[in-house]
Image (cartoon, rainbow, N blue to C red; front, side, top):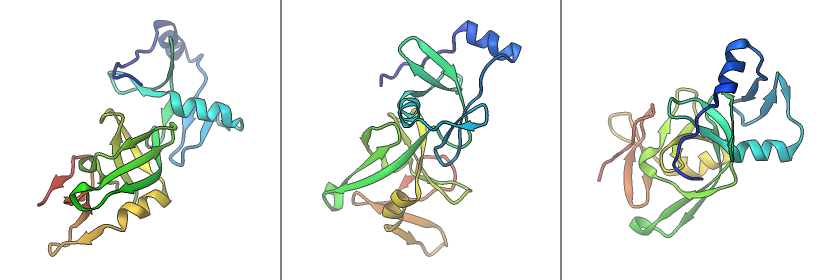
Length: 174
């Protein structure tokens, strides 16, 4: 995936304004819907998950080749589906698998905790938020430490990272 931002074509914008556009929706559990009905074909949902992107003005879209179509997203457009730790201490690296079928190194300074009791990070070079599914979040939260001030931090990659409760970059403590 490149770092360019797709734009919604004018004919799609006209369809939006006229109300003649189908609703494609991604819920907070990563399930895809078309006009309120769940997509049952796993090949379609895998294609959609791989094709999610964002426009310069922050609209989530399905983008493939020259095709760009707006979607509604309940929480985040991408989900962390797996976590792998390599190395230890300051040599540790953490790799995440995402719902778009990609694997990337986790930027530990982008981790934050949402007010809906979910763990999040930024993916695709910081362009998009991703929500950790339950199981992968447990692997990260095993590193959770309570500080004397009642706040929490994570010990990752030889660093102590303050766990923020909103989408702000986490801060290095050591």
